[in-house]
Length: 304
Image 1 (cartoon, rainbow, N blue to C red):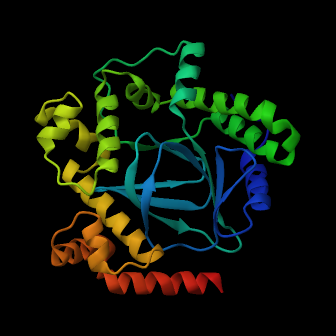
Image 2 (cartoon, rainbow, N blue to C red):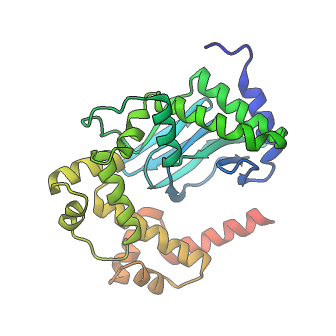
């Protein structure tokens, strides 16, 4: 498919009208988010949930475990699992801001599209891609995304048209190079589905001591197979994954709920404050107290 025009100028124009403030904004389309950054950013730590995200202007870099993932205008990021990451905007200015659109991925909608389109499930052996991958958007995917954004200018059309275009976008993703990963997660006995269940359990129980043998048994895998497939998806071991969850939550508690480092570290499962401080500095580059102070100063400056 060849588009009769260059779509980026139109998409950027729409995004600029609806994402005037810095950061992420919601839209009248429930699953659709827009984000804007007018300057390169420092690393931001958090979790990515299953979603489709396309950069339409500027560029971004993301750290997943030991992997660095770079993507720019026309690339889309597909996140298949809940994953702790560090990301930063690397190309943006006031004249040419970074714009990104994201659409949350719902497993029920995926199953509906798969059943109606009769998309063949991949062989069980197809796993172990990373849980976050980048691909160039095809003209068909770009066209559907453009039509979805146009609905923001026609809000009366959103209830009828947005679900149809979202289904088309999901279809393009499922039939694209990373579709097999998503389909693997939905298949009950697949490695992808078992890793997704393990990740969900770890996110619910990150503050508890864990034995890898118990988690592997819970999802019906041998310890060696569980390690292999978990690391293939997340670029980290289960223990490293749990550690990332603990540190991210402790940081949130200190920043937003204003807990001290000792209380926050105990709440997320650390028994040793000194171990918490060492591991925190290894991830965030500063001690807990200095990082929180610097982050609050940064937020205060941004709000002025």
